[in-house]
Image (cartoon, rainbow, N blue to C red):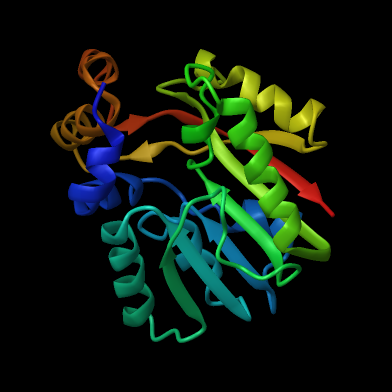
Length: 228
């Protein structure tokens, strides 16, 4: 399996090309909590897929990530769009550099899961700390929306086994509601599909892409939300 930490710090541009092949999730978020006029916090913003979608409607948006390379890409996109209502900062989900009750919406896409894998010895404590931080920074009436991988190369939900306990904890312990959506990748060619899926997902999925002749690679995403 590819080293995602190395990718996020050293191959941000290729990662950004991969996710550019997916549809925007703005409408999914907006249906849960309309973004217009809100102060928004994006945890694990990466190269800005959620930040850039939400920023044009937001009052303000702060993108946090552990990778400066990812945040540099996000900043470049936001500047190119002529937006000024944003900022970026390197940060850990467990210690947010944000004041108490200062944001209306927290979003996190494909990021908290790296602390929630059942293969990690302290995953429950880490998730507990992340949830405490999210609740600390949200204003009354605010909302948290978490999006995670719910099955790559699958047309129906097939979440990774090592994330099942984390997903169950979101609902049973923390009170999140949930649904799922399709986030298929639409590649320009089979060659591109093989190259980019092998880069991020590894040989098993890339080999299947080749066998199936896929230029559209199915994927599901889980969506969890909590209103405070």
